[in-house]
Length: 236
Image (cartoon, rainbow, N blue to C red):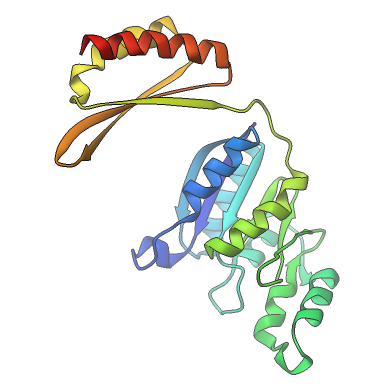
């Protein structure tokens, strides 16, 4: 099972705001057996959102979007999703009921009412933090960009997700340059084609090293591969 993430927001691309949702979502999905396979960061532009959503929803089992569903003028994700699915944008009665319970009548401003506007046929994704819900259209899950709210919405989305085999991970850190292990790792990869083998340089306490990471859904195969990896490390 594979998924894609679309991070929507001019503020991300300008560098003003750092995205914190990618790593959380990738780990969260991995725990339920869904692999995050592609990530795109795009501007708050309707045409770009429509094109990106329509391509990715036909390519992957699930698509997640973050950002652009708030109360301000530049929050255009909901409208763009409606147009991607060729349906009307309308007040969602369930979303309206939730916000009426959360806000006093005087607090339910036109800006907040915007957060009840969703594509026709959308199913709500619960928001336990600030109550204004996200939503799903078929395999597309539309969520807030604020990390704490996004994380709460993910739990609301869990009921709609079907996981596959969980990918297991193990790693070994060695204080040696990546180039020293490149040849041995290539041979190890040929021996274990069903294990994903990666090497990632790091710097720690003014020393350079390499993290050797193994990933597979087959735990026995993973353990056998790690035994061979440890032999390489011992040689070093």
